[in-house]
Image 1: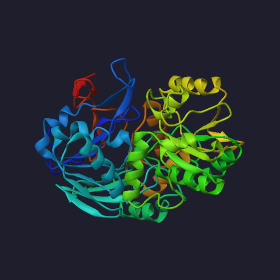
Image 2 (image 1 turned 90 degrees about the vertical axis):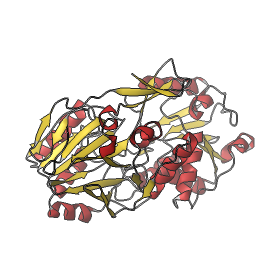
Image 3 (image 1 turned 135 degrees about the horizontal axis):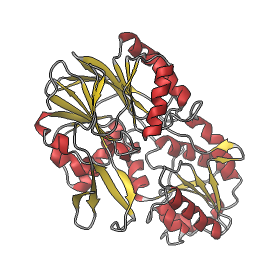
Image 4 (image 1 turned 180 degrees about the horizontal axis):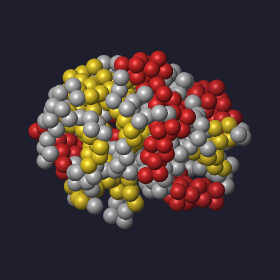
Length: 450
């Protein structure tokens, strides 16, 4: 299966029909371009942490690795970059990304002993990668420097949105630029590959900037220690917590290796420079409780993460007590409901207060994905001929397709991993490529088929 100069193909090997584990291919003129290479976590008795690292099986493209022109990492979330250290030896091509994401990938590669060509690209820049002319389009999401991709070939032009939302005040980074997307639409876009995660939800997402009030109110109402659980890659959330700590007169400490690593990557890219003065985590246990604001990993109930150890009172640096306050500034990812509920029950059984979603009617978390009105806005800006919903289960992608149709997009192509989307002829070839999952066996340090 070789694309000709007249073809423009889209082939997802992961992330289409599921949330997480994104791995996408574009094909044109005998070459392939990979966009993202991510993981997911599944419960397993074989893992020391209880969560097994799984990723798409790249067999289709590893059998054609000589035709792979490059890999683009759109942003620094694990479901978009987490598989790179495990799969790069099979792919062996340059990886293109922005400075913050480059820092995150470089740290992962250094820990894995991998030396790979990492090419730094900035928002708005255009790069020739094989037969593909790619422009990085800045877009707002819950981690810095997320970019959509405008992929140009003689056979057609496609906008790959990556993960995104419409945020006029994202705290870290520039706000969404409607004029930029309108101008892209004015130049003509044949197809859009679009995030579907929140498509069934009406209205619009909450801006990151609105969370300050809810988090500050929750911290001020807490007479003892406060622990905020969030995703380590959400640098804007970390900055908001830093701003809250500054106003509330509390010291910040980081609990969890991924938070410490992400903080280093963020500082290296110029973020978290104001109102983010840290104390060492091993000092938190000795400080007056009313002066402590800790940020912890493990909001999904992961066994062994900092929050889990706090719940079990087994963390080496901090021991929580009745009257302390744990705030979940995060969404429970579908499939993790039981683990999160168990975690909350452990805290509450010890008299530790737990807050989720909002405090006194004010939000303490904001999604990073577009709801229905934002999707409609994007379709009105871009006005593509074809919409291809991805990044979601069937119900999410069906909702996205309906929104596109209601906005006048003539063609909606729905499919799943392994289907070949012909973006010139507007058709889908089912099960065109083999798909599956690999998992990383921590004990053997090898990849196994699921």
